[in-house]
Image (cartoon, rainbow, N blue to C red; front, side, top):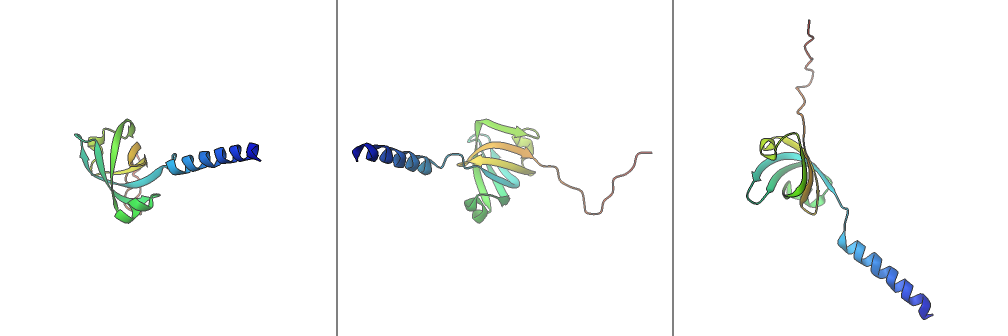
Length: 113
């Protein structure tokens, strides 16, 4: 009986620690960067859409940039006031992608002659 008890307890301990850590939960958000603080390396994002319930309820998120943060679409300072897509984990930014704004509905492209 004891030879079965030890592996079962070890399995429960492993499951409990990985569930507690919550590792791997990425939040994808789309919004506008309202502010960037270079001193603290934080961005304030006005959230339009997100997969994180806390950010959706708050309509705003304060996220921290890390040395591993990948910024596409220019420097982070140039993206202030622009629409971006942000992938973050536990309030730390993994990726920032600048989005291109679409033109007005019904607008047609001019043909080069």
